[in-house]
Length: 483
Image (cartoon, rainbow, N blue to C red; front, side, top):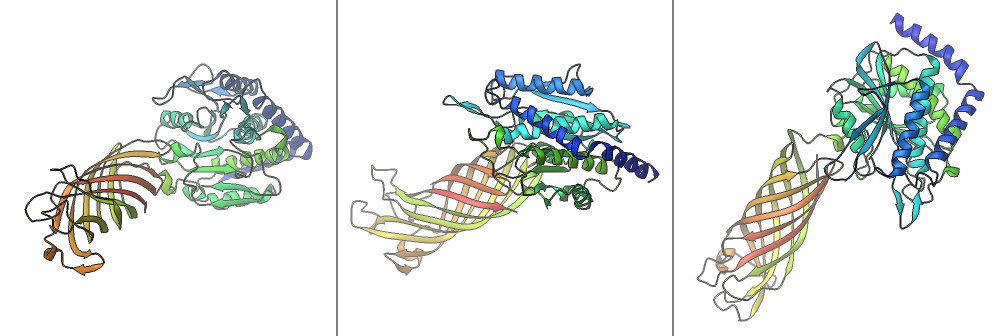
């Protein structure tokens, strides 16, 4: 406790010297210079793996070197990596300030890559994420000027290949031993503060973070909005690979109001004074977490950051599609009609494999012969209601979004029927009340939300009567949520 107050007193003296209006104006000027270079036509949008992307990495390396940051694991600041899905060699740029505990880390990160050029037009990416990259460099400068001796080793990480799949942050997260990261603080799109607030998501992952953030924000007169966890299902940032390894994460952004991912995301639109204020905030926030023994991992992560390994989930689903009758012994194919179901799904996944079991109430319709023995005769509209239980194996990917392939079988029990809107018992129509068959499908899961397309092929005949055989064919589009 004595060390905490001594460190805090030293910090306050340093901040009084460093954070005054002239100091912040100097920081804003440096940030402006960083962003103007990173968004220049020379770098052509900093696409990962491109010459412009390499030039951006060289610039960050030069800045880290001039600040006197130590390298991490290598003789230079680069961490080269490749991916199985994208061609090329990509480069993180990582510098460090050693802590008393050299094997425990606080990671401060921002990605520096962007979209490059499209149809001859440059996408400069000023807010996304030259703003975060510039802030990262200046936070590192702040610590070197303070001569701060941290408890935990500080890693300043400029990530490559974020835009194509969070590959840079994934590479660094996998290099660090599990449990060695006290917190990962990420800055992605922090250039549009204006009269708004800095948004900080993930305070629920670190014990005491809500109180620490509020205290530091009040001292810096910085409006903040906090959320316990990251909720945006269709947006991801470099916190994700760390969170999936159980690390507390704080995702900092000024929001999505800027024209990000558009050619209009240019340097002159950036709030440089706002970024300078965020730099001061991140510096003091880092010290407060570094010196706090109470700031420990809560063990909680956002739903979207569940690793998917050894993970049992259940959810609700709704599906709609069509159904028709197939005549395997003839050239006849019945006309399609509607199908829908609602139900419960349970899945267990381990790494890239999983098992899915469901139970749904299902309604299916189709045109069928009034006399099953005469497939060319008069047709009638047949509707059935029943319960379907699918059992499917799953092969899935990992990464920003989880795509998967389903294959397995199903069993359906029909308990109700309608012929031309007239209700009747299935047995009186000669219907087979038990149907079984096989199914396959493709889907994608984004956090708890999932979408999939499934095809089902009955192997048992619709009728218990004599041939011809008639088989159900069902195609469904399913959406749902795993809790």
